[in-house]
Length: 569
Image 1 (spheres, helix red, strand yellow):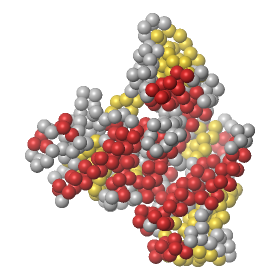
Image 2 (tube, one colour; image 1 turned 90 degrees about the vertical axis):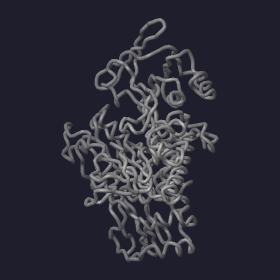
Image 3 (spheres, rainbow, N blue to C red; image 1 turned 60 degrees about the vertical axis):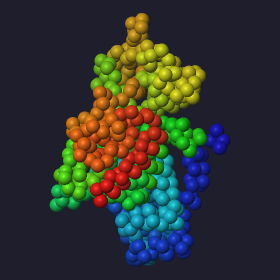
Image 4 (cartoon, helix red, strand yellow; image 1 turned 45 degrees about the horizontal axis):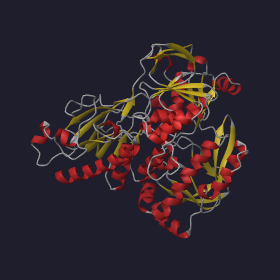
């Protein structure tokens, strides 16, 4: 593609190149496979098939006539797509069970449609590959097109410039791949929108839903509920939910486990406290993951894995944080208490894949700038905030190196702070060579941040050389902290043994644990000190802290689950 093309030209080229993928027409054979799963009905001109905000929608296929998909915004309509015979409407919301982003209605005087309910659609996508491939590819491509469409609003966040709460809502929706717009309250459009919706500065940040209704200062759970991410795991009258496998954490290990478990017929529930992907999901580019010679962004990799798990029937709920784990004597041998859920999740087996969080910098004033200058991920969203400025990355591992390389493409200068002498001991050689060769990356050895300064947002940091104790002040609006990690295991009971750093022990390290002394078998390689409870990925003691290793452990843990279920059968 010509490098002189404008962004508008590139978008037009993208739409032309993806038209046949985004809007395929199903053939007679595919229609014959779907027909028994759905019901036919007639739709008149202007009659709604579904409304924006509805959840758990299935597949709607046009048999004759036409349907159109449109967005209503500020009293106006934008037509997003028109589909004729053998076309179908929807995007990944139909696959994931999240909220529909737009409305659909009849366009012809009379149209006949085939409606396949959500549960039958997921069955078809798992069992009928001849149908699933074009549908899933179209769903994914349509979501990509919506995210590139400058006219499509989706959910809208109204926030003051530099607002920490506004950034968190933006980050939450972005990492959960929900199309949305962040609107500056002080902009002309922002002021007009606030006036029309009767919003004052004290109401911000506000979320404007697809129906045009504002939510004032919403919590993440309220935002997740509107987006359809927070799925009720039980009906109101139920006090217990049962499953074969509960997976706590949806990083690479948890997602891999979800794909393998669900595809092999296990009733699988995945609990994620913020957004699927974990630390890997925040990586701008993973270059050493098997099968991607030019690299792949962590967000793209883990999002694809999530869609794959959905396709096979895994149930996700976000944000859904496990508060406690206890053990029972019945068929379901583990019980989980979940934040905001009145029911108890009873599972035959549990995979703990909660990963690890980056340590917080011990710098004066750091708490003030969390989310408004201090970040723990370097994605395209953060990259836009730093364009043309000086940024600071703290850390000497691969994550820090990838962040520095990514940010250097837009930032004027990147300061990479490391506590040691060089990068050789902590960073992959291919990456360290690139970092050292990049002209606008400066590596500062034996350097730590002592103080952060600014008003509402970060403006400067004070650095100290720990060998010479020399200090200097650097003007910067962004610090990216990637200085090692601590395991997310504080919610676990003492029966789950951990090492001196808090990582979960497994395999040979737990053979002498009391629960195993009465067992007729030894613990599996990823099994913890309690039978039927597994640990995979970064949270496990002795694990290799790499994305590919976490994926492998997720698959291995599911094999251990099968062995456990066979033992108790």
